[in-house]
Image 1 (tube, one colour):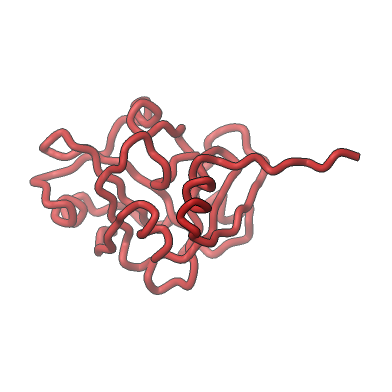
Image 2 (cartoon, rainbow, N blue to C red; image 1 turned 45 degrees about the vertical axis):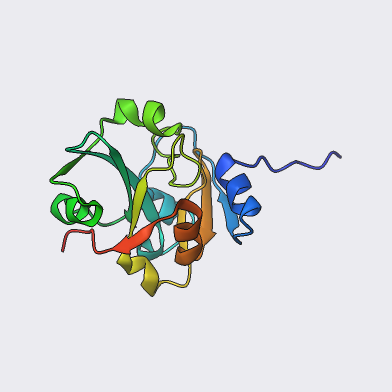
Amino acid sequence: MAKVKEVKTNAMRILESLKIPFTHYTYDCDEFIDGMQIADTLSLPYERVYKTLVTQGNSKNYFVFVIPVAQELDLKKASKAVGEKSVEMIQVKDINAITGYIRGGCTAVGMKKQYVTRIDSSALLQETIIVSGGRLGSQIELKPEGLARAVKAEFADIIRN
């Protein structure tokens, strides 16, 4: 029998090239499901699974925020964290054009451009966090500091209380 070759995503190749250790998880998925459903599917606690959100600031620049799946981005805190007057979520239809990823497979690692990125400071309370692997059905577990290094991110308090 032929060995099934694992298909690597761009995000995985980048992490490997930077020698950032990670664990890859896959699950059956052929359409968007939210992060909490993914956590449930993989039997992972919500506080360790993070989603990637893309916003556009007053300056028309794009900003990436990585927050726990069960939380909401606080737009005021997010704006302050990136030095913008305000930021707003981009339209779902624009995700691919801006990031190169599709909804549900978007990760901060390996976007078309390196955008200013902030990871919620709650990530520092976790030994590892889980983020999208860069396509539907793919998740990557890594240390928060590893993700920050890979995407040149800073940690900030950006979730709604």
